[in-house]
Amino acid sequence: MASKSEMHLKCTVCHDIFKNPVVLTCSHSFCKDCLKIWWQAKESRQCPICRAESSMAEPACNLVLKNLCVAFLLEREEKASGSEDICPLHDLKYEFECQDDDMPMCIACTDLDEHTYHSYISINFNLMVRCKLEEALEPLKEKLKKYEEEKEKFDEAETFIEGQAKHTEAEIKEQFKKLHQFLKEEEEARLAALKEEEQEKNRVIRKRIEVLSKEIVTLTDTISAAEDELEGDDLSVMQNRKEVVEVVLKRPMVNVSEFPSGALIDEAKHLGNLTFNIWNKMKDMVSYTPVILDPNTAFSEFIVNDDLTGLVPVADQYLPDNPERFNGCVAALGSEGFNSGTHTWDVDVQGNADWRLGVFPENAPRKGPIEAGVVSLWHYKGKYLSSAPPSASTTVRVKKKLKKVRVTVDWDRGRVSFCDAETKTHIHTFKRIFTERMFPFFNSEHALSIIPLKISVTTEQNS
Image 1 (cartoon, rainbow, N blue to C red):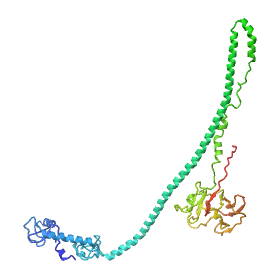
Image 2 (image 1 turned 120 degrees about the vertical axis):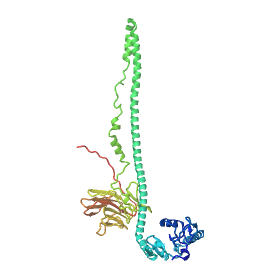
Image 3 (image 1 turned 90 degrees about the vertical axis):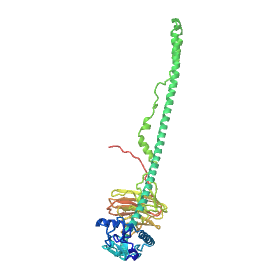
Image 4 (image 1 turned 45 degrees about the vertical axis):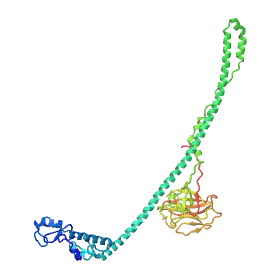
């Protein structure tokens, strides 16, 4: 309920605190605008309360009442700022909420005309609704938290991918730099050999030219002297002819006019099979490994070396937990699987206390402990074991400690064989029926590497 003091401060037309109150000759007061609207509607200047005619078209301002209203509103505003639970109109605690106006109400507010036809509920009930709403929001909050965590992972993955790209780019440039350097040095060596041959061949030709030049001068002089004698009188020519002829005949002929054998540049030596010869020589600086590791499958405690042929333990590093990666087993796979043919690779396990080699099915789970479908040879705590679940592991006898292990997979015949790569001694063979693509499998607590093959170049005659 409104206080009595407040009721006296309300306009009977708008039922709100007076705004610019004016007083009529009958002593009743109204808001200036409310009274004007009332008179316009009634087409007369009657008092809204007592219906007395007003003799004034512009009633006087009720200054005292205006000051009281201003003071009341200021006091109510101060109370409202002091507590959010107290109604500023009636100085009572809020107990309800108006559902139409979506605002709190005290018990007195329910009697106000503006709330006459409105529905309202108890704040206690409203609190219950809010609690239910908060409970309903909990799954959304959890989902939001999960999304934020997933976004953070993807943000980290984006950064990781950028690092991968930069590292791969640097490795590509380094490899091509080596190739460019090799080709540059090979070009320089071959051009130097060509230049050296050119100089040698020119030296031989120049010696021939020098000899011939000297002979030409001598012969020219001899001929000139003989011709001078021929220009004399007949008696002189007759007297000196024997001497002149003797000089000419005694002049030896130097045999330098024949072109020497091998005097020209041996173009065939320099250009014949040039690209093949360079390629053949290049094999000494390149390597080929039958299996390349996939870094995206490697467990987070491993790093794959730059040429992707070895695994090196690492203490701590961030790696995205992508579907291809092992996260419960210190393992990695080859980059390419196979579903036909025979495939062989050698692994250097020297100095490695515990290791496991074999093949892994493409669709086998990679999260958590790894067992299903793995066909492998183990070395664990000094013992060699063969394993092909669901069968139990069995001990394998080996004459001497293995340093290099050869793995051979015949997918079509369903065989996986292991042998000592140094002595070619057979260790164990599994017989399985493969139904999916198989990948080379490497499991180790220590470093291991795949051994590159020896490269040879052969030629065949076209049929």
